[in-house]
Image (cartoon, rainbow over all chains, first blue to last red; front, side, top):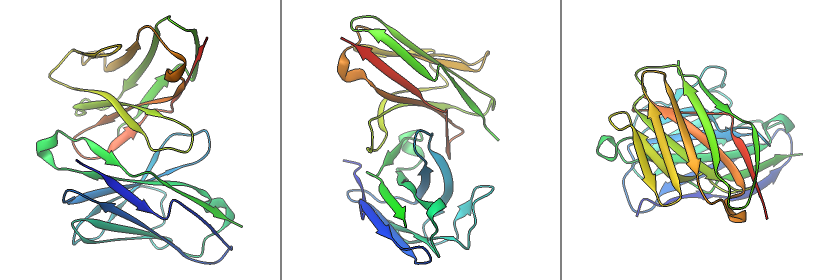
Length: 117
Length: 110
């Protein structure tokens, strides 16, 4: 149980285009999902916390107009990188929270490798 | 906000030896401390976690200790094997978001 999927697993796009990444909880309902970014040889940095039916909470320094997050259902959150540039190339990973009863454990998706040319 | 520091950044051990990775955190409200193993291009994999009401937890060759007073926690891997080679991350949570350490590259030499 507690499986999280992401789509696509990798994407290559041209500079200036927008890219949408989907994160799904396959066998549970996730009221909270998290989006992380990981540059090569670096740690995971939280970008935003996504709560179903409400606006996402962005971490300091993350542009909310550039990284659009939508959490329209209890099993799906999407991250759209708008007007992508080469510096946005990174590994994007989502995670889902089962809730307080699971003592904070997060379940991670497999990640999406974004390359902006 | 929470700040997690992790040491060492790289660790090389001989197969069969033990490996220890240490982390410190700053926010006394943090109550959940997971450790992740990440292989290149893959998702972080939870290997062990500990909650603030426990001082030590063990799972086969892996153990974690927590010192709440000093605000530090450590990962211990015994009888290391080549397949333990990976990047290891500690993290701390106050019940909501996770804050990760910078990571430790563990190399187990056979």
